[in-house]
Length: 124
Image (cartoon, rainbow, N blue to C red; front, side):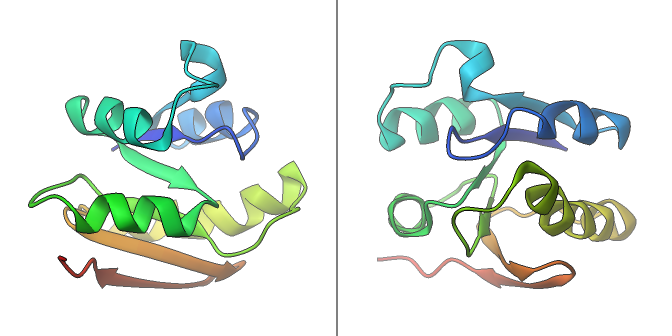
């Protein structure tokens, strides 16, 4: 599993994901902090990376506009501390790794620690 973390989330998630065996990058570490969401989406798509963000509206729209994408994980809350972000993300990653499933054309919407749903992204 490969994950690209949007700038609205903490770079501290990168080493935590690495400890779980997940290849993660934060946009700040790869010089993409000021790019548009569309540019970030294309970068992730070209590298087969899931996008992890709190920016649901823009990324759900981008996901719905393509026939195929590697997936999206959206935290449905803003203002979370980096510890809270990890509490929300860790159970999702554990579940995905345990199931061995990918998120092709799907979104995980995370509403709290251990509270998430996985669904297909409807096409426009």
